[in-house]
Length: 102
Image (cartoon, rainbow, N blue to C red; front, side, top):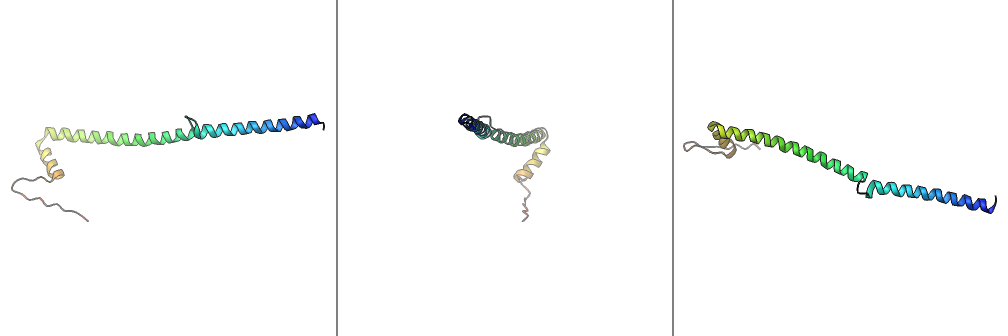
């Protein structure tokens, strides 16, 4: 093999390795460090899912509270029942005993 052939062979091997090194560095950069990296996108999707569940909880809570509020506004019996159950209010001539289970 001639000297020219050996040099050409070494250069081609070096270029192949440079390309692979560049490809590996690019993939690592895109996967972890880029603004739109796969890792960042995965974390964002997880937080979106958690916030969606939390949003649904609060939507249901608002609906339940709105229903309760409208019932308390329209009916005095419901208002009295709510005050007795939630705040242990009582009439002047009665006693309230709270039973706490252990």
